[in-house]
Length: 491
Image (cartoon, rainbow, N blue to C red):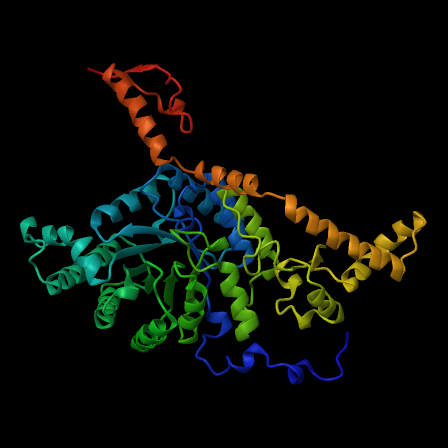
């Protein structure tokens, strides 16, 4: 309906409280998607090269600006996927301005392997950005990569625990700088860099690490919340200093979602001037996933007034379905924005308000994200929703052909019936089979510990008999099947 007063006079709009922040201009924001790398690292998920190509096309089409393609040196399938995606971009199947990115650790061996891999599949090293990463927090420096740093510095491994943290910090600066310089010497022009576990790292060291990376030839700094423990207060501590230290630079934030804070923290970081948020479609990723793409872009638009110029919001649900199909991981029916149930209403109070005007109970316009309001009927339904549906022209015409008059008596009778019918189902419905089927299929996405042990037993017996298993016949889900004995182990 048309309100007599402007809507802004009737309610406080979200932007009432979000104006005046230091957001980048919308045209300077780049959406950095990591579905093909971090998303695939969600336990049990594995995309085929063809699926990665289809996802890359969908991500390009919806408006993502940077695509993280992972570690091509690590797996043949990733090399094939990269080859398909680069060729697809050359052929115009991806946007010309989409940036492709590959990852490697901060050492010449990884860089050489990545360069060779790219050359072997006819990919120019400057068709992609190299992300050369190391560690950032003292915990990671000493206890994760400490032995590597000791060897680089010519120290003995038995000194590992006794060496002070300062030693590892300095050695890490050298390792990162040497790796970036080496990549540049090999002709790599675009180098993203950063240190894992940044959200738990010392801020002054974080800034020193970033300065060192730029000085060595790096072109873009990335700050991660690797374990998803960031709070908005911590974002307020780290981000303003980092942005101040590197004015005019494109800066990346990469936040995980272990506490469900990745979207909030990403938006908060951008409000301090971060230009490149990292996201994944459907929030895929390690453990609880990454900042969900759908949440970040829609929050920016509707709560902060930041509309991304070329982003196709209406394709979010289409993208969701593709990722669900390829990953085997469905999103919750009540996942914000893209869940099947978030624009579905049953409550009589809510439906009555929506029928007056959707803004009474719906802040997100469904059509913006490729959805529409729908009603389901049950114990909470009211007369207004039943009346609205029965009076829709497409339904009313059919009822009239059946000789049914849509009047107050019919509407009340139907409402009472659906309320009673749903209440009776409550006493008999059992959803155990539904939930068990879901978790049964989820467990089959990967190879469980028990399956792994069974597989090891089968392979071990064959190896003891001098038989080399044929990997093409590997019974991934049925490890007790007999292997094809087509190849004998050489003695």
